[in-house]
Image 1 (spheres, each protein chain N blue to C red):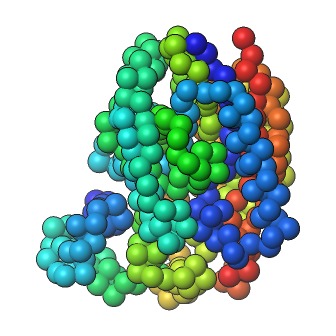
Image 2: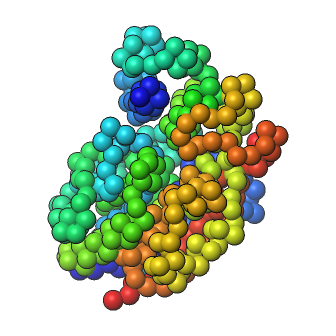
Length: 108
Length: 273
């Protein structure tokens, strides 16, 4: 259920400019409306794309969040690899990493 | 009147958003194929473009996820993404609520479909429109098949939905163009982004071009996930178009472009009786 809440937060943030403003002005207040684990809360508070990826957030949701954070494409891809290196394999969902850590199939 | 045009194409956000990172010798033939598809689309003189997409949580979330949805508004907006990221300016796209309503009513006779009087376009619709109707001067009717949040729409229902769309298109007075958008094999939004199973793609496209119903419906989600990634689930849009058009397909362009994260595809299909 908690992963659902994490993804719901990303869904709301990605598509609602008012939520985006709240993210910048009062992140803790915004996050209080979602039933998140401490780990999920910290991942968002830190903008930790790698950990959010490992937690199992749907990649389409996470991709837009990374863009919202201003991560250039190569850094976004690397952040997910770093997440797997640090926290282990993706724990849920269908966006698991299949390639080797040093395998850059698109050159980034 | 009738269905007057049918085709499929890729919609990956990198096609526009990461254009500068792609080798021109790969990018430009794809763009040329899109222009060719646009010319064929316009030559069919459509009154509206029904675009069967695989949206990615722009409108529908897992609190209420329809297997099928059709937009029913006079205008839509997009993209929801940062325009600088997608490199497509935010704009309003014309719709046709009355035509949508007529199509939905007929589709509903055989397939339960949700309707939506609000709909924000994401890259799944905006990238194809960027190439096919760059002036946004053709009314668009957005359609979504759940290819994203499991449990997914079964393939045989995607076929039935395509049949229903055809019946509906043939029943309304307007000339309808139909475009399905999706990737074939791809692993988008993962560290594997850029991985493409070309052999799997070409086999799928051969089945699509033959309008091979049995072949198209034989994939299981487990096989697709293993061989074509979670992005492969979007073959549902191709399947619906084949069911609607009933004819033989013409692969206008296929080229794996890793930085675009997909085997870039542009194809048209004959409209058979």
